[in-house]
Picture 1: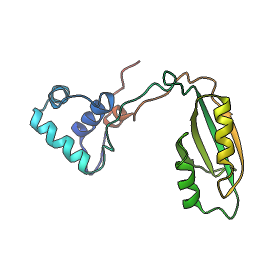
Picture 2 (picture 1 turned 120 degrees about the vertical axis):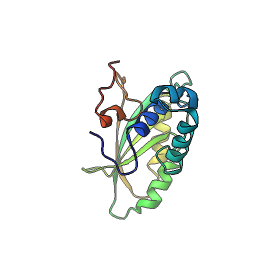
Picture 3 (picture 1 turned 135 degrees about the vertical axis):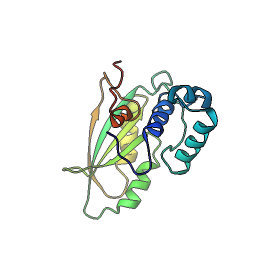
Picture 4 (picture 1 turned 45 degrees about the vertical axis):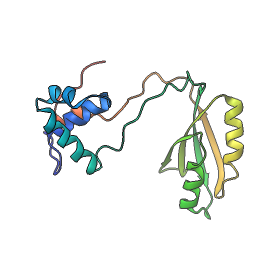
Length: 164
């Protein structure tokens, strides 16, 4: 059973509904959770103010927009690296979708989105001049047979998520 000091099962169901469709109206969400629209409005505003909702976005189709290549770049840093400066420099590169600090031989793993291998090569040339990088290792994604959107909130309330 779910136990959280600030959230109850209705909050989780609202978060799950918004995660599924951020454009849901308060009336649509109210029908899902069994509350009135004004109560849902109040709960959603409270979830926003407490930071449980980080924002509302549109999911774009990268391939249709010409961004056809995904790669993971492992970054091995030098002992002199200044992590804050490194992270800021890497985050400023538009091809970088995610930066993960990791345990293991490498210090960071970057998820990188580019148009082509040529674009990836140009990106890597720009990346390698960032202060503190000793070397990199790149893994190109051939296909993505499964990618989960959102968080598995249904498991937190003891419900089974519907099979896809």
